[in-house]
Image 1 (cartoon, helix red, strand yellow):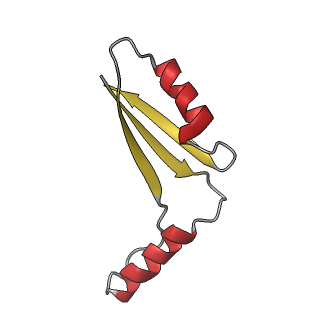
Image 2 (cartoon, one colour):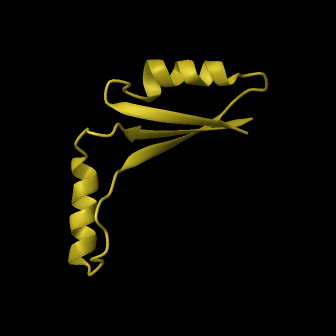
Length: 76
């Protein structure tokens, strides 16, 4: 079984890496990019029987800094 966790900075939290990517894209001639938010994608290969609640607990304890980041779990 596999779980995919997408972690992103919460709205209102400055994203300096995203801003650096936006500026670099502009320097490369991609002028239509008005904003970039950078996050991380974590794929977990799980033992059968692992629940979404367990993956959520993993996110709360380690995978995401819930003060400044939000996360989404997809099981499948």
